[in-house]
Length: 306
Picture 1 (cartoon, rainbow, N blue to C red):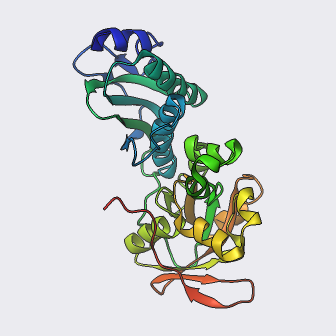
Picture 2: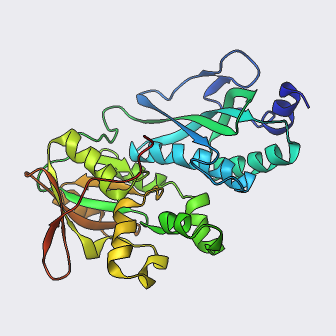
């Protein structure tokens, strides 16, 4: 199968949305963003052996490649529109490509996101996606807006993906799904747009990613360790091990946001997926408080590519 036959069979032929004036098949796609909205763009690359194990199901690879990008858009408070796909394959394996496309378009359909272009090439297995969406002008969530006194909230659960990676082939399917099929928190992100002062998605670990907000905003934070939204699978672990996975494990694709207490009071109860876990402080660094009231510094560490 040639490159263009592969594209036509598995990636072309989907309906072209009205905002896309030229889609797959030309040198570039053309889009017309909604009036009064800013475009939000993000890009992520997944490489076999680094971001997913060698024997990961093709459908799970396709799902996750799009999910991690949609999570970035969620962290900006953006509504997703579409994406570009760059795919490197060792060979034109039709069964693999069909499975990958199934997972990719399954998630795309859930969030009404359109593939409008990309590239394929021969090489080591990797998949790169550039996704884009839109947000009301001036209302995008950024990392540099946290203010002392803000409530820190989390949308999603922490630690399960890291536990699944730790257990490897022994991880039960329900736990493995946290790693292979993360759920981007788009609804919560859009609810926080124009309301929260800052936000970030949890890809490298809660502490590391919250640390990006603290550094960009010139603030510190106090976290109530027992308030962290641990995934159910972690509750059977010793508390210290569970907290380590939740704080530093990564691959959760939860959202962390900061907002004024009054804003949190108005949102609380209206979005079941949001929970308060701490407060932004003047002093730098991250401090955790346990159930006995003991304070300890929390390292701003997590996954690092280098």
